[in-house]
Amino acid sequence: AAAGEARRTQLRHAMRRSAVLIGLGLVLSHAPSFALTNVLAQIGLGYMAAVVLVGRGARVQLTVAAAIIIVYWLAFAAYPVSDASTLGIKLAPRESFPGFFAHWNNHTNLAAAFDRWFLNLFPRDAPHVFNPSGTQTLNFMPSLATMIFGVVAGEVLRSARPPPARAAWLAVFGGACVALGLLADLTVCPIVKRIWTPSWTLYSGGIVVWLLAIVYWLVDVRGWRRWTPPLVVVGMTCIVIYVLSFPLSPWLAETMRLHLGQQIFAGLYGPIVERGSVLLVFWLLCWWMYRRKLFVRI
Image (cartoon, rainbow, N blue to C red; front, side):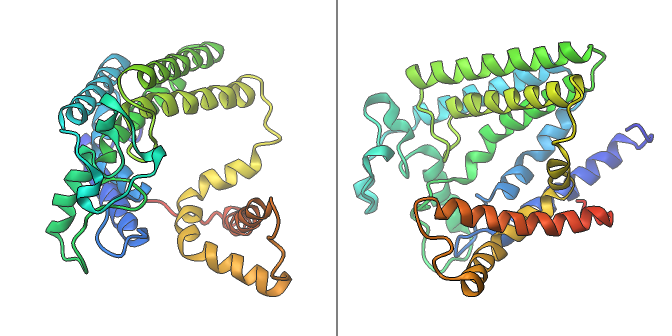
């Protein structure tokens, strides 16, 4: 926009970006058949709506986010509760809620039913009955509200407010989201990440906005920037490190075991050491790209 690019051109670019994100999500999906639950695919599905809301003002943006959250809650609440055993599924206690909250039970909720219809429209090795992880295609709808929170936060940071006021606004907004999310968890729907319930949307969105406020205060207001270069490297190469992590993480871990000993990741903290070691290798690759200004853009 600052370069004078027409809105129509921007929207065409956004459409291409959405298509690429969805395509990458399909390629990286762990499912044996067609699935749209990968994070990149989920972002791609909601991205165009978020782009359309850019520049519309916080009141309009938050009204749309609230409408999405409320309508999505109503749709789940109106969908009849069913027994997972009829699908041949035995729910663990943590996957099953009593009373009204049963509308959000794993594998028997509205989004799971939608996937049993939608995903079976595509060629599959076997009919889709449920996703073992519990994640669903329709997660992109409440996730869109999360993206809208990001649009609002970004425009606050680019506003004419004094920097301390921007940080304060984000802190208050984040607190309001966390409070509403916890209240919703106690009253109208449970906090469940895997199906991105409205309460989780508010709760997690508020925490992320809080983190943004803290980092903005430290880096841009206080000027404490010596600790940021490792994060800058990841920020400039985030799509690379994310995409590579899917095919290469298991291979890297096994290669380290082969050359450094099978017990290198043993013990209580073994998984942390393993993930940290793999992350370090990916970061070094991204650092090499960053030093040479090799950036992948969509």
